[in-house]
Image 1 (cartoon, rainbow, N blue to C red):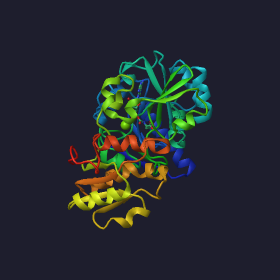
Image 2: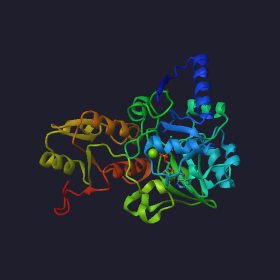
Image 3: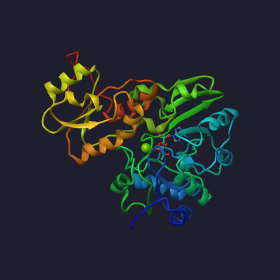
Image 4: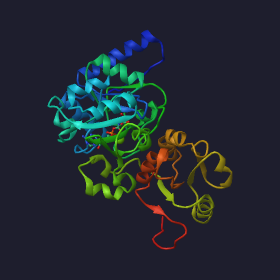
Length: 353
Ligand code: TXA
Ligand code: MG
């Protein structure tokens, strides 16, 4: 299959012709990679069962891992799911935006989209290209991240091309994603809200609207994900991992520097803030932006991991981030990228890379 690569330039007429062409692909059961504010998505109609099958096959994704259904307006959720007052309270504050809400599904959504679950994940993206495509096509859009299964999600159209060239009909290039990590996924239990996957909408932000916000234990400790399946099937799979080994160090800056001085050899990278870069004399520095800037570090993380592979680095060292607040999403991705192994430099055993 030939994949067309089309750039959205901001020229209204040209762009609307491109969006129309992409919408035709969706309506005819084809696949288009699209920018969203979080990461690029691999879009197909959520009401054509064969589109979902094509998505699983293009990504190499296990078919028991359900897809998110993207809508143009929050109230469109009515067509596909049973909504609740809590849904609308959250939608009013956070949609369009990087929040996905799991609701009981209606029959119009095929089982292939939800991997047989009776619930459906609903998201209303704020990216104008994603919004327009959904609106113009008139279809709800199933869209997982547009990477090959298991590796870091794409945050620019070039990353999508690396993974999907020849496997899908079209890629819309809308530049770099603003947020860089996938949406926050929540499940509602009455007015209570459980975070299944952390993202840019944090627990603290949700608590301004929802009565009781909890974080699924598998967010912090991915080893638990196997046991709590099927709460969110995606949590149990290998995720976000580059070819390079990601070595996660639980220590302060002094311990991190010493660990690298003592252990790192040859072809390695260090993920570090701009200010801390000067402490590292060896290795390739992979900069996260200003120290303490969780949004910038999140925006850059997946492209840093892909860049490490472009450079053919063997190991990438990174300090364990905080497990809370705006760093929780970054923590959740990096711990999975590291295969859930954490090195504690102050203890001696079970500490091998
Ligand atoms: O930001 C995002 O959410 C991006 C963009 C493209 O919108 N999409 C995305 O999709 O990250 P994906 O498929 O890579 O991740 C969807 C996550 C998976 O962990 C999946 O298991 C979970 O949402 N999920 C989907 N439907 C679910 C359901 N009915 N119940 C529980 N978890 C569900
Ligand atoms: Mg994904």
